[in-house]
Amino acid sequence: MVTVKMLKPYYIKADEQHIRIVLAYQSFAVLINNKVYQFIPVESKQIRMNRRTGRVENIDAKFAFQNGKNVIYMSMAELISTPGFLMHLHTIAQPYLKDAPTVGEYRQLIHELEIMNIKRLIDRALDEKDEKRFHRLVQLLKKETKDGKASHPTAPSIL
Image (cartoon, rainbow, N blue to C red):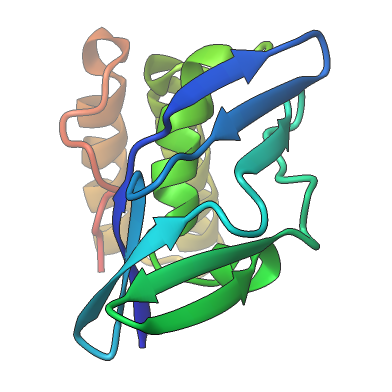
């Protein structure tokens, strides 16, 4: 199994369309079968992302990783499927993305979706003539809409 141990860019360069995350020797490390492999700049040296969409564009790039005398090559496509890689990458690229939603905007959107979901569940309870569930959902809706904020960060559990 492959996991990302560390991803710290040497530098980041952003132009109108792209974000280039440039890597240097040992600025990127992966764990492969419980062994740490360090990035070495033999093949590709950068990750290129679309600044508007946040998508990685150089999918065909190959990166080299070394542990002692062993060198392993991984394509960008393989790295993208590695747990944690995209999370690290988007954390690094976030300040450079155009029109990127903020964490607060995501939370507000999630809250609005939760409210809409509760309203749909209330409609369902009415259709099924489930008075007990209806009253629980109405109370939950009142609690969630109080002050326009969710009372808890996760989706409401009502069943």
